[in-house]
Length: 326
Image (cartoon, rainbow, N blue to C red):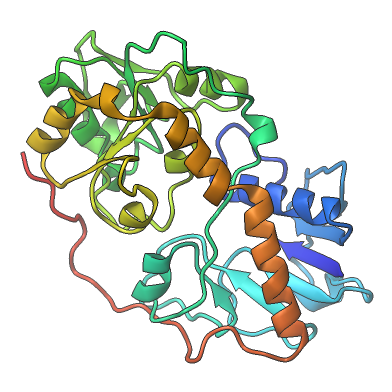
C-alpha cells in the first residue's frame, strides 16, 4: 500500500512529543513491512525512511495529496475526506463541539466507549529507542512523567503521595515553580523537578525508578507514560480513570482515587515482578503490534467499509476534575 500520514505537527519529535512519536513509529513500522509511506506534516520535518511533504496551509489539503496514494491516515479530527479512503486517529479527549468521522479510531476501549464508538487501537512503543531495562540496578526513587503544567495530570497529587510515604520523587515534565498551577512552589528536598526530558536522559531516569506515580484527574485516553514505565519494570500507582484499568492490570500496579491508599501501596513496590511488567509491554504494546492493527483498518476502508456503526460523539461534562481524595 501507498499510505499518506497527515499531521499538524513536525517530525521527528522534539523531546517528549507523544503524538509525534506515535506518528513516527507508525510510519517506521509500515516501511519495515514494505509499504510506501509519505508524511504530510509541518515545515521543518525530516525523515530517513519516508517521503516528507511540508504542508502549505494556504492551499486546499486535497491539492497536496499525491496522486498515487491508496489510503490517507489523519492524526487529528476530520469529518470527511472524499479524495481517498481514509481513517482518523483521535489522540485526545474532545469536547462536544468537535465533529468526528465514522472512520475515527480511538486509542483505548474506554476512549472509544466515551465517544460512543467501537473502533480502537492501543498505542505501541518502539523499543529500539529505549534499550534494555536493568532489573539489577539500584532503584531509590519514584517518578512522575507527564505535562505537569496540566492540572488534570495532578502532579501535586503525585508529590503528596510521595511525601506521605517518605519517598523521593523525580518529576519528569515540570518545573518547581509553576504559576499556571496556582503559584505552586515545592520546597521539599525529596522532590526533584527535571523539566521536559526526552531520549536517553528520560530513559535513564525510568531505568532507575521504583515506579510511576500517576494520579491523573481526567479520563486518560491512553497514556504512553504508562507503558514506557512498565517497559522499564516500573509498576504504576495511579487513579482508576480512562484507560488505566485496561492497561494497569493485576500485577502491574495499584489504582485508587485515594492519596492514602496509593501512599500505602508504595511500601509494597518490591512485591511487583519488574520483569513481568517489562514482558507485559513487549507482549501487548509494541509499535509493530499497533501498526499491524492499523494495516487491517486500511484494508477495511479500501474495501469500502466504515469503521464505526454510528457517528462518534462525546457528551459535554461539567466535571472538570475527577475525584481525588486526601
